[in-house]
Image (cartoon, rainbow, N blue to C red; front, side, top):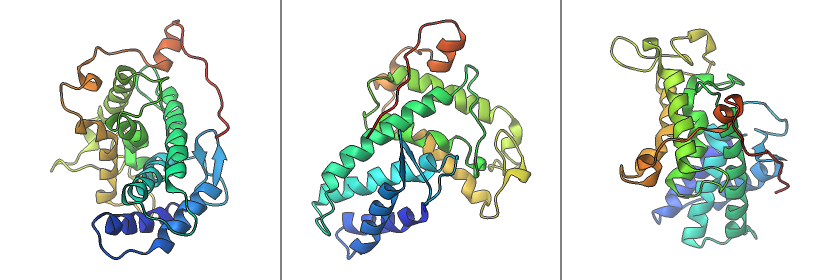
Length: 235
């Protein structure tokens, strides 16, 4: 499951700072996650596919960032070809990002599917990471992604009940909805939503922020404008 990546990320951090690390944890996580790839940019969270956003919350970004560390440190073990796997994982995350962008409705809403919805806009972490790293797929312009994800942020955080009297995030999705919380959820967990803000790592003058807004796929489609045809990938 995605928990394998939590352990692997810890080891990748130790490797990145020159400390003793356990390659077995990284090797196991990378191999199992790739084993659970189901196609067209989607991973299963374990041997069975769950239709939820864990590919966005954990799997895509963690896998890419772990492999980036392996490539940067030139770590070699167990015939794991990190450079090739990183290229593959990045392409898969780009494809997943295309699917995420298409899920954002004309008003910024998106499907409330699967568990852990209380992580709110963390679902857009892959788009934020790709934008920050300047690796968005050619099919998605920076202005298009910014416009879509800002609309989603506004749709989710419109209600003041997203925050309690002290200004802390509440358990919920588009407001205080404690019934949506999972047994492993707590007030601190809600801040995973901040992962959707990775593009804030870009300076204000960057084209991602400075360019004029553009309509995203759903807005084009339901506004009667031409929009790109979707497709499947076999990588």
